[in-house]
Length: 413
Image (cartoon, rainbow, N blue to C red; front, side, top):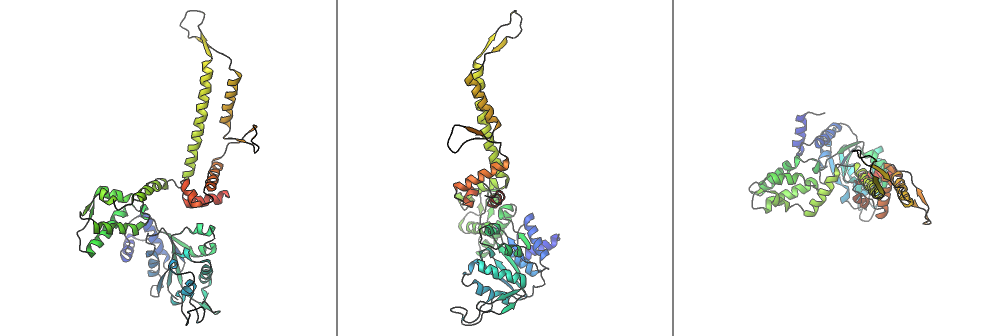
C-alpha cells in the first residue's frame, strides 16, 4: 500500500481526478511496478484515461531520464507499421530512399507505450514477441539482428481473450504483455467522481472563454451520476463543454441536462445497467423463471383434474340426527379421469417428453435436466438463432459477452 499523500501527489502530477477505490488501486499498481522492468498491460474501455498509467510507470522507473515514446498502433497503416516500429534499410520498399530508425531503436534505454496494441497485425505481433523475449529485432529489408533495451507498456480497450479465440491476437504475446495488468474502471463505476469531473471540465471551459460558471442542481447531479457513459470521461467532457457554451442559464437542472444525453443512449443505459450487477447469474435467473412457468402450467392442469373429480362426489347424511358432519362418499373415477391423473404425474416426474425422429406416437420420458444442462441448451439455441454471432447471442440472453465466451468454451459449443 502507498500513503495517501503519495497517492494525491501522483494524481496532481498527472491530472487524475477522482477517489474511487478501483481507480486508486490502478494508480497504486502502476506506482509499485514502476521500479521493475516488467511489461505492463493497461486494460479498460475507450475514454477511461489509460494513457496516464504508462506515464506513471515511466516517471517512477529508473528509465525516467530516457526517452518515452507513445505510439497509437491503430493509427498506423498495416503496410508501414513494421517499418515504423523496427525501422528499414535503404531500398527495402518503394520510397525507402535511406535507412530509417524505428521506435524501438529510438527508445533504446527508455519506455515505449503501445496504445491499442490489439490492433497490431499478426505479422507484427510475431516481431514484437521476439523483442519482448530477447530484445532483438531486424529492420525491414535487412538481415542484421540488432539489440534494444526497451520497456514496453501496452494498452487496449479490446477483450484480448475474445481476440485470441477468433485468431486475431497471439496467445503467447498476450501472456508476455500481461506480466502485470492494470484495470482502469469505467466512469459508470466511479459515480461519486462524476460531479467532480463535470465541475472540473466546466470550470476549464468557462475560464478559457471568460464565461460565468455553471452549477448543477441536485436532480441534474443525480441524473448525471446514473448515466451509462459509454464514452466514459471523454464523453463527460464533451457534455460539460456543450452545456457551458450553449446554455444561457448557468444553473443546470435535470430537464436541461437531459437534452444533452441522447434518449436512445439513456434507454440502453437503463437496460444494460440494470443487468450489470447480475453478471454470471443472469442466465440462471432466466432459466429459473422458465422452470417456474412450466411448473405453474402443471399445477393448473392438476387443478382442473381435481375439479372434475370433485364434480363426481356425493354426500349422504349420517343415520342419527346428531351434529356429526355428513359423511362423504366419492364415486369411482372414470377411466378417462384416471388417464388424466397419470398424465399429470408423468409431467411432474419429468422435465420434458420428446417425440422420436419418425414422429411416432410412442413417448419417452426424459430424465430431469440439471441447471448446467438447461443453461447449455439455452445458449446453444440462442447461438443457432443468431447463426453463431456471439455478440447478438449475448444481447439476446442478457449475458455479458465475456461471460458468454467462457460458457461457450466450458460447454464445448
